[in-house]
Length: 385
Image 1 (cartoon, rainbow, N blue to C red):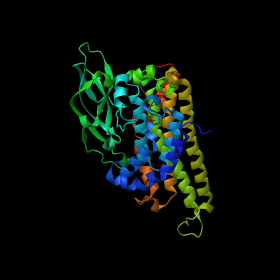
Image 2: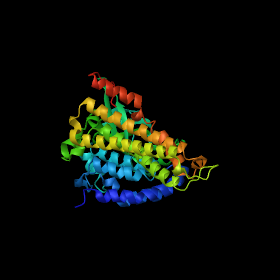
Image 3: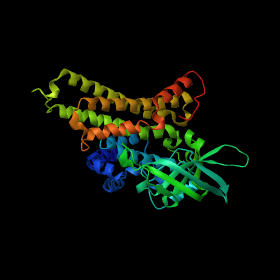
Image 4: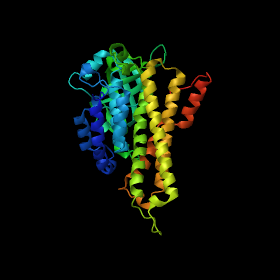
């Protein structure tokens, strides 16, 4: 009997070549390719973490990981968009039930960019909130239909109230800001909200989302809705790097078989130095993948019962896996010759993409290791990561 979600994993594996085929054009467009978005929608992948009561698949992070890694072997940018679309559907399922029923009344998933930055300001108004703000890094916004943003609510009693807000994409303005040297195909432009009234049920506490204790955890029995947000976000963001490292190792191994080194009659595969580099890359890529699998397994056991030390270890492990993947791709690029720097070559894109995504705040390895060390010593972690 096939494992739950195995069909989605197989769809992802089958779609990886399509992502690879359109990666260069998506990079030039500075947004996902329409054909790839359409194929992903048809596959049902975006329903992965939507509850069954709304027509979704209600699967867990282990299937999420398998799907994300498979897509990531095709292209970092598009797999990044896909894993965040999946994760943001899960986040919407932590909102109040009234909004969830509204959102999924006529669909089984949404395409939603999001920002965890509390870059907006909200004022209580008419049973909801008057929202203003600007947020960067809106991955997938060009194909989105809803958006997810964070803001601080200004209350008369001065109490700190950080919240996420959901809005239809028609309520925001998109600014063309995505001019970058890596992850170009994500189309992560800026979003602006001007004086929009957001109903109360379209908001949720940031701290509840962070702890896996939002309204969704009270109404959905499946354990995935009792999981802290940041580790799921970390998994979503690290899969593209680890998948690209796997693809780089495979490509390096294949090219070595026929590549004749300049000035010699020898194949690269016959050189001990190249053999050692390949072996090291394979081991290190496997180490990175193993860390993701370990974190996913631990998350499925501990959920929102995880201690600050456990959560900080998960985040440090994910940052370490991305750092290791970045090193794998860099070392392979160093041994792949000048031809690997043509813009048509997948390896140069992989290097630029993973160099860029590794700069995400959650992958600041020094900071993540410091936080983990502090929690190991019983000290305050001094931050949500």
